[in-house]
Amino acid sequence: MQQIIVSGIGGQGVLFVTRLLAETALDRGYSVFISETHGMAQRGGNVISHLKVSRCGAHGGCPPESTFHSPLIRPGRADILLALHPDAYRVHGYYLKPDGIAYVNSPSENGPFILDAGKIAEELGTPVASNLVLLGFAIGFDEFFCSRSDVEMVLAKFAGSRLELSLKAFRAGCAESGTRKHVPLSP
Image (cartoon, rainbow, N blue to C red; front, side, top):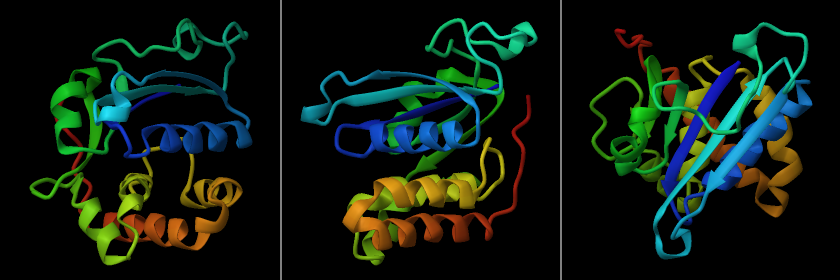
């Protein structure tokens, strides 16, 4: 099972990224649980999504650690945090388990998993696609349940008229992960 937190502020595409990952999981035959908290999203407030992905369903004949009991991720249990805003890590970082990985969109790139996705999206002419830049960056490290091509196939279903720009943003993020050395976090 993989447990993923997607966090940001209203208007950053937290729900779109969550839906994209959930649909990718379903296309690959995984079971999925999602829970979203919108709060004051329309006023730029915190938005958080919990995403659980497993080969097992809610009550399938799988080992207990591979089954779902709740759509919410408990603090200290998330494998991955996608922080679409620099403050998202500060606000929701406690969800990560000790060896979890946070991919953070921040202008101060001072770590292997921190990327100024907003700047890259702006340079591509599509500032609203920073969420896809960060997702591509994260997917490029091969820590997710899916591959780059899996996400691209699902993105093609949902991007509509913005498909070309969305793919360009996602691929730019993937390319950035190739320039970083993967340094696992210490427990």
